[in-house]
Image 1 (cartoon, rainbow, N blue to C red):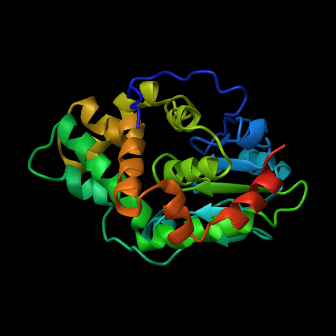
Image 2 (cartoon, helix red, strand yellow; image 1 turned 30 degrees about the horizontal axis):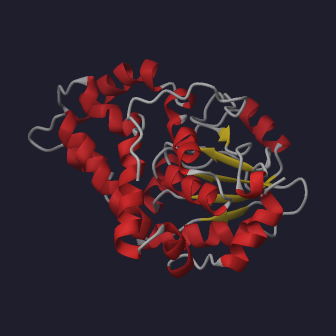
Length: 272
């Protein structure tokens, strides 16, 4: 596949980013051209960070979106730790009790004797290679796709994890692929996280907080993979899928149960 520069700047979000007070990286990932030149419908597919710090104003906005399906990709320990303040009455919440950790895997990595920015990028690339095949992710990915076609007019769905960038980024990329969005555009939307999450501004403060928490003095660059995204990470997930399954379409069919019939049903519902 052709690589996209990790520094590529896709700054025009065309109104997709929805700034919320207590939720990071909330945005509409529709509006792109899909199969047959049809556009992915806007106002149906959303992606986000976790809702543990949602404000009253955020809740008021979320209620206007008529979200009826939520794929929460957080591990059970993350859900317990950060909670979920957005009322989910009437929402079909897709989650998994598999994959519990005592400590966050990236914190365990950062607690090593010493790491540098290259180590951090390599760690995150390895995470992306493994993520599409983790049992808990496969379960939720499969349920997410099964829930999209039955959406009724006016209903919408959201996928989130803790930061809304890695696990969420992979599932949104797969969703775009099913809908016929080209690969360059898929990466464009993925990299929009760096703008939506205000990574350039937030990174120094996040690095300071991380260092204080784990008792280290790492430079800001070590923390970028855990605050923002780079194209090389999603490329690692694609390469892993293509190596282990043969192609994205074979992975979707054999691992997630998304064959031609399921794909066409989703395109009929989600493409305008």
